[in-house]
Each structure stands twice: as C-alpha cells, then as structure tokens.
Amino acid sequence: MTTRTPLMAGNWKMNLNHLEAIAHVQKLAFALADKDYDAVEVAVLVPFTDLRSVQTLVEHDKLKIKYGAQDVSAHDGGAYTGEISGPMLAKLRCTYVAIGHSERRQYHAETDELVNAKVKAAYKHGLTPILCVGEELDVREAGNHVAHTLAQVEGGLKDLPAEQAETIVIAYEPVWAIGTGKVCGAEDAQEVCAAIRGKLAELYSQELADKVRIQYGGSVKSGNVAEIMAQADIDGALVGGASLDSDEFVKIVRFRDQ
Ligand SMILES: O=C[C@H](O)COP(=O)(O)O
Image (cartoon, rainbow, N blue to C red):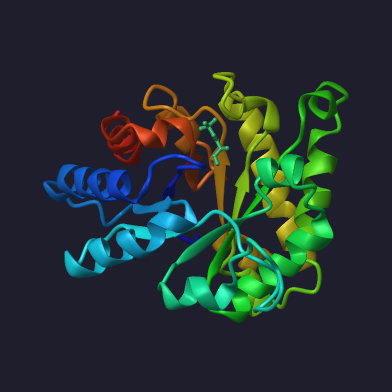
C-alpha cells in the first residue's frame, strides 16, 4: 500500500500584505517548531506580492514550510499585462502553484483548456500544480457532481505524461462549501475523492493513482479536519479562511491531535 504524506495547504487568497505575511509565517514556524511535524507537509499559497518575503524568511530560517502561488500564466513571458510566469515563480523557488481554483474559473472565466495549459506550464518550470476541481451547488443538487468533477480532472490532465501526473496534487473543492461555512460531509467528500482516484487509474494506472495526493477544500476548520482526514482517499486539506488565523491553521495541521 502506498503511503501518501498529507499536504495541509493554506490558500490565503487576496489577504495579507508582505509584512503581514512575514509575521504570519513566523508565527506558524514558531508554533510548529516544538513538535515534529515531518509526517505532514505544510504549505502556504500566498499573493504574488508576498512571495519574495516568504522565500527570504523560509530560506534564511531554514523553515520546513513550503510556499507557492495561487495562479500561473500559461505563457513563459511576453505581452501579458498583469500575468506572472512559471519562470518567475521558479526563480522564487516556489514548490506549489494552485491552478483552476473555482474563484479563477468563476471570476476570470478559466476553462479546462486554459487550466490544462497552466498545468503544463507549471511542470515545464519545475512547479507542482495543485489542480482545483469541484462542482457548483446546482450541479450537486442535480446529482451530477461526480461526473462534473471528473470531467474537470480529465480536462486539466489532458495529454499530461504519467511522469508528471504522478506528482500532481488534486484539490476537490465543492464550490458551495467554499467560504460559506457549509462543509461537504466527510463521506460525501470521500465519494468524490475516491472517484477522482478511480479516474486517475483509468487515465494512467492504479499504481500512479495510489501515489497522487487528493485534498479536500471547503470550510475546513480544526473542528472538522480530523473526520475529513480519516477518509481513505483524502490526503490533505486546502484551507482558505481558516488559514488566515495562525492558531487555527496550526490546529488543522495537527489534525492527528484532535
Ligand atoms: O482554496 C481554498 C478553498 O477555496 C476553501 O476556502 P475556505 O476554507 O475559506 O472555505
């Protein structure tokens, strides 16, 4: 059986300036330093303007916390005003980049085709994508949530070679549970995450599917994380609002103590 190290990632969204970012990461590092947390990987996905400050802190203090961005351009460079490229993120030694978050899909009309191009751009520059998928409320109510989410997975991974796909992280985030306080039931989340693993097995192999980490995201808090993490196919959490409170995020990272 494959052991997958849980990945607990805080997606700060458009919160915390670079000074606040330094203070926040210092608090996380201090709170996590008194306990061996090697069995859990911790990452923060920060605004572009925070990356250099977070990189400097993490490298100077040799912190185990990984960091990354919340989006990447599909292009390597050129006349794309406002975009940030894979080479720029690689130069900042980012580990992760979230791609296809529902807020990018909703407010920036990102399609599966563009998400797929961004996933390929991330790999081209040595970044690990956290591919975000998940259904809106009407899709869930119509009972089409599994098919909808699997179509996003297939679209995001189109023509991606197995040697890249085996390192991807997939975050299942039902849109109706994001920032609303409505948590998808742990068993309902497990149903979709198991289906995602099944899709990976179909597209690649069972061996590859067993290696891929699948996160759940959507109103994760210290009070519900243990139940979510107890599910067989959930290997971590992508945490929005609760990741802005360092004490709360630390409790989430230490879900095994709950
Ligand atoms: O990327 C994180 C998700 O959008 C979840 O956000 P939330 O924890 O505030 O519901």
